[in-house]
Image (cartoon, rainbow, N blue to C red):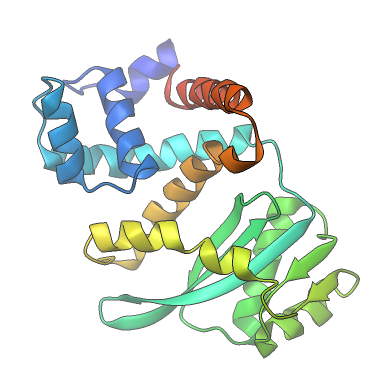
Length: 232
């Protein structure tokens, strides 16, 4: 209880409201004004600016705790990159997901050449703590460079349509980006993407693959994990 009291010290609203606001913002790609309306409907009068500041302060802390609780990733990584504009400059958002759809890592870089690919692959190896059995990418030459130099023993699949999983994984953050009217700074983008990935992984239950009963059970477990990450 001591840690919880310290974490929420000097905040006027109870921890439960702060936790719920941060969860709504990142779970459903809502704007802070949307969250303000949802809380107002419940009789909770809090400004969208307070919600924005809660997400900035508490989101990364919750994400770090969620990552420590994560059960681990699969042995196949689907890797892709898309461009995003931040302050009128083009950046590349690198993303890797495993065969279960969990986000292994997201990383913003200004290039997508061989050196950029190697930096991203090194991050993946550090997080996974071992070489993946298989990686799936498009035919971008940078991926081949990083594969040959860092994980030559892994299978490298570049066949057509094989990487659809990674390409589709960008959609939720694209929705969030539009809701925020584009990222305003590199720091803001990295913070949002990191928290979004952690919350997405927690509630990535594969509903279409399991029964309704198991879905309810897994969702309840996810809420317990969220309470552990945001509470004492």
